[in-house]
Length: 376
Ligand SMILES: Cc1cc2nc3c(=O)[nH]c(=O)nc-3n(C[C@H](O)[C@H](O)[C@H](O)COP(=O)(O)OP(=O)(O)OC[C@H]3O[C@@H](n4cnc5c(N)ncnc54)[C@H](O)[C@@H]3O)c2cc1C
Image (tube, rainbow, N blue to C red; front, side, top):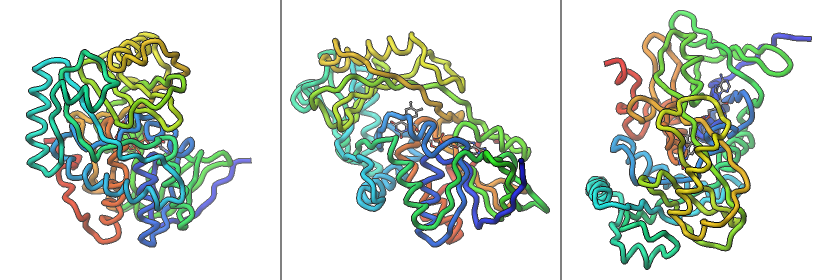
């Protein structure tokens, strides 16, 4: 029998990806016990399906300081969650196959060094010496020693579990259907779980719904420009240890990390405009990834790929996230649109949103993440 239950919460977080889970965790640490709603299970979408890159280099300048602050949080989380999230600060190499790409990387490095991020340009010889597992096709690259990797299957969940231990309410299989607003302020979230409908009275909502954010926001008359894009990861058979870094080649269209047990996770996108919620893995994309992997790491030329999965990236028009309130809807904060690089940013997003809610102001500027930039 369907019933409608009523509960209340100081804050409701919609979405159990890394942004929602990190926010629940830092809020709970600050003594605010949020209720987190996740329509499936924690980390079931991009946050649990991504390439595991925790990287600061090669980012839009607006989010570089956040990525650098987030890496400091990742280092601390390694010991604070009571769970091994396989975070490894093993470095990050971005390789080039052409002089033109080397010039791009050089320009990028100048900006990064100005912003205080330590990166090194490597010529062909240095690349051979430091990363002998890479293919001959590369003529050099850019290296950031403080970048790294973590296990995406574990990190968002460990944050959610830690939040729960600290008193947060985590509600899997619970979908937020509507945000109720009265007199210009949030009053409740109407949700549905397997037993029926639920009214959660609350003055505050953090909407961290990834690529599904626009649909629910639209019911409030708020247009959020986020487009879903399919991205695929393929996993090789178990191999002896080859490398510690997160590596990527824009020219070959692939990136990779080697997981602790030896499997190499190789990621890449398919067609140029693969804008869809479809999470099947097209054969063409798998072939492209396998080709790219073999070019990037010759040792992968004859290995088997055991499985693949697709995840949904959440692209904004300028590929930078939205963290903002909405005029006329007091208590409603959007934190979404991390555009395919939000795994690294999850912890700092959660920390800054917590400061914003608890102290009234975040310790780092968030103006560059305003929703209104798309309305101008
Ligand atoms: C294949 C792939 C590779 C990637 N590689 C990297 C990488 O190497 N490094 C990096 O930094 N980033 C990477 N990313 C991007 C990164 O994973 C995302 O930017 C990040 O996980 C976004 O986190 P999120 O919490 O905002 O969203 P999501 O992980 O999408 O979580 C949103 C959650 O909200 C839930 N939800 C939505 N609407 C509702 C509702 N109405 N009610 C209840 N629940 C709802 C969804 O079910 C989902 O679980 C990659 C992404 C993909 C897909």
